[in-house]
Length: 180
Image (spheres, rainbow, N blue to C red):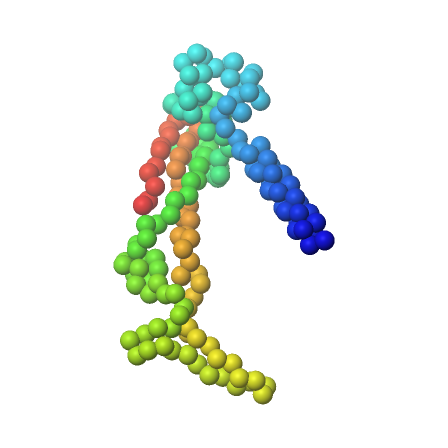
């Protein structure tokens, strides 16, 4: 009986995992999927621009639709003005992680990384506590913080690509390097 329940749980978890993976993979938009879903936009471009867009590249003078085919939907849109003309700027955000020791955790060399066992130069540290007629003994570092002692470094967003449009055409664009 126990193997039947375990198998049922395993099959359910596997089915959920496959469904979640399919959802994630189908929701990702690539240059190829955008071109295949909107061939009319792609066909309206010159052969030179088709080659650029199919490689995920852009140039000054491209239309808003061509940039969308090449780079996809932006993370932010900002409306502004440049030389008296209305502009729209698209910002694409990527994520990076800070190198270990760059102020994480607790300083440039990572001092403070603990394991929670409470061994010190004085010996094993533990505390004794009585509550409600029961005795509790705690062993470990009283300053242990799982956020700072996590092995998963923080994810840091940064603007990776920026493109500005005036009158529906690219007037400037930039590729930015990660900060670390």
